[in-house]
Image (spheres, rainbow, N blue to C red):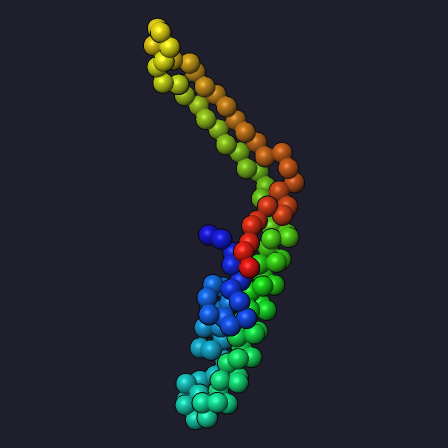
Length: 109
């Protein structure tokens, strides 16, 4: 899964997921129904900006600070038959992460 903040309209990606929760939890449906539509839209516009700001902050932080540590890959077994005499070779490979693991996350904004 890629980390995508979305945009200031909070129409998609992480900003939409955050906006949907803000819209659901910060004001009851009864209070929303009692408001003028224009007033509610002004409030929601602020929530959209807040949602995008939170989403962008999260993706920026994760991209800069995520640590991936201790990655190890091992392959053991035999190769397939090949060559003129159709023999196999044994394989025993192990790859171990050698970097610090910081900043390896990719995000799209």
